[in-house]
Amino acid sequence: MFLQILKIVGGVATVATGVVSLFWPLRVPGFTGLEPTGGRGITEIRTILGALFVALGAVVLFYRTPEAYMILGVTYLGMALVRGISIVVDRSAVSSNIISFIVELVFGILLVF
Image (cartoon, helix red, strand yellow):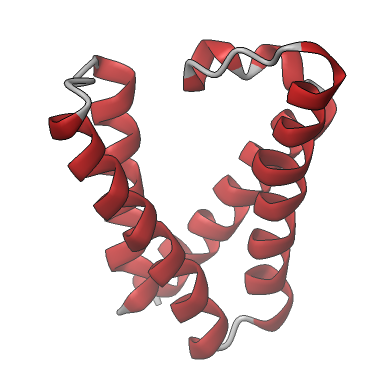
């Protein structure tokens, strides 16, 4: 039961991240380091960080099946893997990047199991 609640929290947090990115894309630089340049950059934040995260989180919350949790979990694990490699290769071990890595790894593990 507790694990199920944590999985729902993962879905809600994913949707919340997406909602902020979708409706307030100019606030995203504060927690991502991304600087949108012009309309094209704002559109990318709205679609990739906004719509994609809302859709992934909403599917989990709507279906609540092991398969839905698995898809979101694998997505987070993929993000953590690439972020972890990038932190080393790009020498970007700043606190916000480390926090994002830890959150992605934890959500990924929780949602897969």
